[in-house]
Amino acid sequence: MLLSLLAETSQLSGQAIHFEDLGLRRGIDLGFFELRFYSLAYLAGIVLGYWHLTKMIKAPGSPMAQRHADDLFFYCTIGIILGGRLGYALFYSPDFYLLTHPLEFLKLWEGGMSFHGGVMGVLVAIAWVCHQGKISFLRTADYIATCVPFGMLFGRLANFVNGELWGRAAGPDVPWAMIFPEDPTQLARHPSQLYQAGLEGALMVLVMLLLFWKTKARWRPGLLVGVFTAGIGMARFVTEFFREPDAQLQEFARSTGLSMGQWLTIPLILVGLFFVIRALTRPPIGSQPAQPATA
Image 1 (cartoon, rainbow, N blue to C red):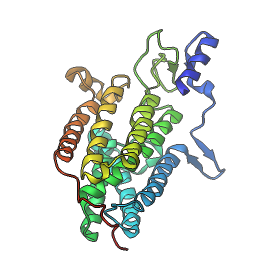
Image 2 (image 1 turned 180 degrees about the horizontal axis):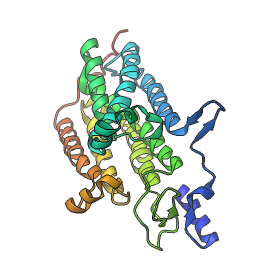
Image 3 (image 1 turned 45 degrees about the vertical axis):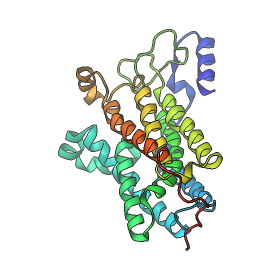
Image 4 (image 1 turned 90 degrees about the horizontal axis):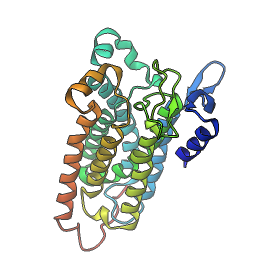
């Protein structure tokens, strides 16, 4: 729907959309501090995910109690922030963050978060909580995976509001192509942030919620986390064709034929398919729904 509105705007003006004409701001000016929408997006995704997790564990078959959900909320938040930032530093700009400007690592409000690093951080958090609470890692990961797309949706929308991570140059047949003010070439480009918000965010939210609430997927350990991992990997692989590679990785993309993001999604897709096949070829847990974990 948003792309349709942008297309209509472009057709009325007869030229490419200029991003600044949309009137979007990067945050809310509080006078002494600017509250960035990028930070609010992460907060909204985490809070909404936590809220939904508390609803999920009240349904039959939960592998955890409320106290486990509370611990996961805390440790996964840390995992997302530290893992996402560290992943970006390692995968996308190691020289800048680790060698020449290490203090820039702390400027989370300026963006620069890696999904793959965030996943690793969340996995470590889940492993810690499961070890401490003596609950199933795989089934807990199923429940967390169902909530993650909320954050993906808000995060990609925040990237768009920031006018960052724009797409590749678009042809005249893309009526919603736009010119971003910080792009030195001033070419009309794909708003790939919105493509990612749609596929990695909204579509995956719909798929995961339907699987959890309308099917018996939660009775097959690993199925939900497998669908999420493979689905998000395939969505990212597709949208990367429209996204401009980071400046320091453009030569890498030209020489290998794929962007860094695409190379990093291939293992995700394979791992996800493994867990889907594993879950579907094994009998579901118990003939009767398991009781929720005790508090």
